[in-house]
Length: 305
Image (cartoon, rainbow, N blue to C red; front, top):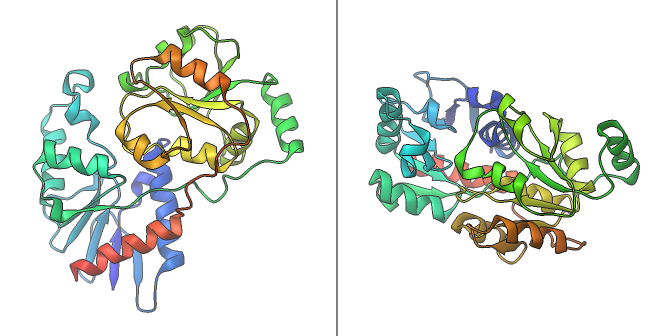
């Protein structure tokens, strides 16, 4: 079986990029005899299946069976906030509707796809995501070095994600303004707008090794998002031994179960209080790995041929 995989999304600094990079490596590691993976934005004639692991790569006319990974449908659920209504926006989702199989990270997203795109459940496959292999508990020496280099406080709450543009569902302004006793560190690429956030420390973009160390050093990860497709950062945090407090939304409940402390999605103050009250050791992360995800993805390809 020969599969064409559009890997352009791997350059994305958001979770989509990590998904593409980790899945590509795991697909190569779990390929069986006779399986071949080629990185192409469009399928060459000799391929059996085309997979776009991100929305932007979905093809209206793929010519061969097409698989598309849809990480969430937030822009469809919140059109007034995301303001994406142009022709390109509509064509991307039309391409998803035409795909032979649609991979989603949670059953919560699957339900959203059925509701907002009218896709039959028969064409949906849930394949969970996982922490990158490099994300593991850091040594005390690594934590001490990073704390000195970034001038981190001894105890702090951590938020991780992209901040180049405002994202209404992330509720960072509310998080920064919430009453707390611990400092708040925001890790990830940041836009100019974040300079107005009160009483926070910005790290900027960090390497995967430094991210693992940040998780290992933090008192807790706090995630006030009111809508998620999977929730990769809490899973990463747990893998590094960091307790997690997050908003009570369906995807996070599905993925984390009883491994996190949950606050109502409209109670950011309560969420911060929960995070500050957490103690180590954190519960273990879900056991699912990228190799598991890759094997499940190969099974989707085999369904189509």
